[in-house]
Length: 68
Image 1 (cartoon, helix red, strand yellow):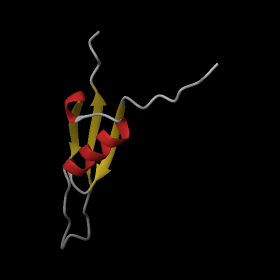
Image 2 (tube, rainbow, N blue to C red):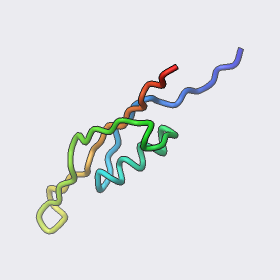
Image 3 (tube, rainbow, N blue to C red):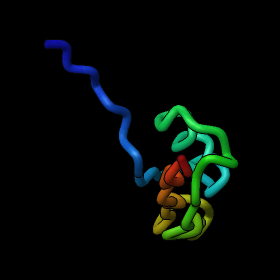
């Protein structure tokens, strides 16, 4: 009996920008942009002088269900 590893259908990713996070999510899901829904959970935030208090962008990338 073979067990195939299934790729996740949804992932939350953090990166410097929302666009970077989306690209990382697509790569991890093995999907094209047209095959997913994207929700920006948090935009990047630059702190004082781009050091203190900066936060990464966070997105949720979810594969759309295929219609059969």
